[in-house]
Length: 353
Image (cartoon, rainbow, N blue to C red; front, side, top):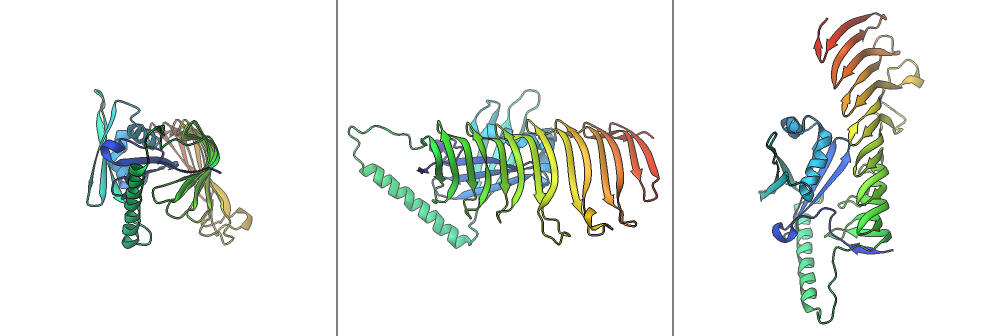
């Protein structure tokens, strides 16, 4: 088994800026950005969620499509597109990352505030970690200065040998990844770890450095939260989410969402599930809640909602609507307990009858 001390996945301009960036798509609507000041050892981390105020303020810049956040931020950090540039400033334990999209037709900029990451054991423990990091840098510098250089070939410190079960550690000697490498990139099965707790965060397959194929996400307690399929680092295929429902006395982890994706956008059939202790039949407490069709990130087709009726305690249809590009379009039926229904008609989100 090879043990390698390696740099984070995405490293930009270290000799110019002193910062190393890491961008990861953790869930369908959750992106993590982590930054290390390689000079001081101070680490910053933030999570971008579709439910945050940040998204409410900036959704229009991404054309109201959260799936665009990860590829845009990632491409900017990796300098893959000339039209994407960035600026950043560290002040008062906040690193402000400004992403600038240069375009004659639709230019924009968006600022992401990244909070300093403090150890779960408190600020004192964090200061000790930083001191250890800085001492480690000094030791490496002294060791490098004392090494004889005559007739010694130059080596790339970031080179990772090909092989399986290779362990990658961060600057504080905490494991962050274990898996297969080829051509200095993740290729084959691998496991990602939480660097603060050592808990497994993700298990899956990789190709050319990207998550590619089947994978599993875990929470901080080691419980499975989702099974997903990736293609080149973005969702593509099945995406199944699991949870323990609050009313479920069995504590069983069940499917809560069964989704499909194509090239990072929700596409195809979708089902969500609920649990209600009010159900008359105990076998029907866990029930299907919605069925819908999606196309390129928008609901498109028939959408049906089911409930446990508060009066009869039976599982029944509650709503049935046709959708087009994320808006009501066509018939909209609202069902009541007695079996009657109210029929409305919509035209691209506007009620016309």
